[in-house]
Image 1: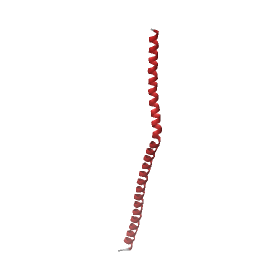
Image 2: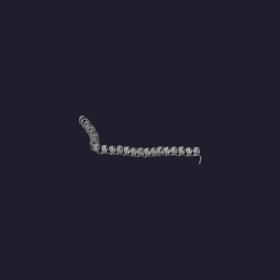
Image 3: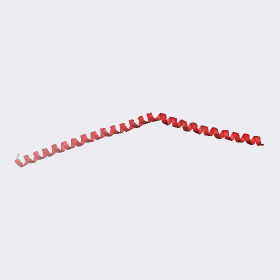
Image 4: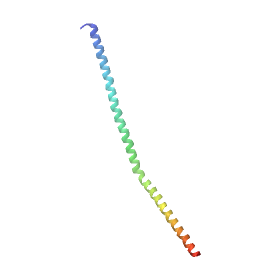
Length: 92
């Protein structure tokens, strides 16, 4: 094998090793990115579920307050209508 061919083969081998290192680095980086993205979304989902768990009593009390207040308003309007009807009946 002549000197020039040997030098080209060594240079080719050197470039191949360099490319292989870069490819392995890219693959490693992509795996780490996928893992971090999965952990990121798991944390977001857990925070959402946890915050719902802790806020649920407040939401349920507000909901019961709203529905209770609405039913009381209906009772008041019905009783006012009944009082007006009674008053009208007395005037007749």
